[in-house]
Image 1 (tube, rainbow, N blue to C red):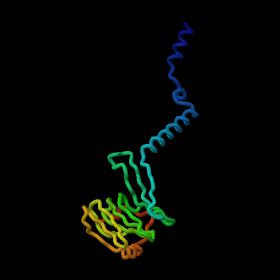
Image 2 (image 1 turned 120 degrees about the horizontal axis):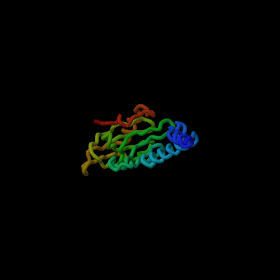
Image 3 (image 1 turned 30 degrees about the vertical axis):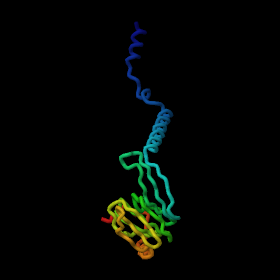
Image 4 (image 1 turned 135 degrees about the vertical axis):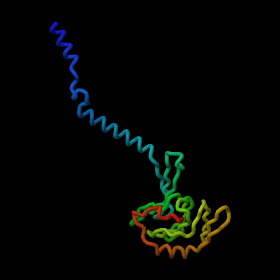
Length: 180
């Protein structure tokens, strides 16, 4: 009977806290595995990026969003030179390199036709409310909505104005381009 009472007493004892947790080595392994699983999950859920070179220092960064409601594909105008690496504008579907390290584009998010040369801030050439067609014929830039041209300008004049703009910095925000 004494033996039986001792075995009951042993069974009724609460397990010590050291027994309910994993040993140190197993805790670290579990934490590392959880961290790796989280990183893999986040990397597959995040956007993927591809770069399309326009000119030597100008690129379009195509961001593929995994969320279809977000539009799935977003083009960003990217300036990447020795002095600055910055997103200049968002939603730039119409763009053309025009020589002398200059690029002309229509920004749907910034609602306008812009030009930028070198490491200088962009300058608004004309407001554009809708998606437009951009045409460059020699020295003349023309944009049209619904087949009706409404702006034409000389590239030489706009390049000269663009070179007088303040310098781009890495802290440049694309939202600064909102035409209205």
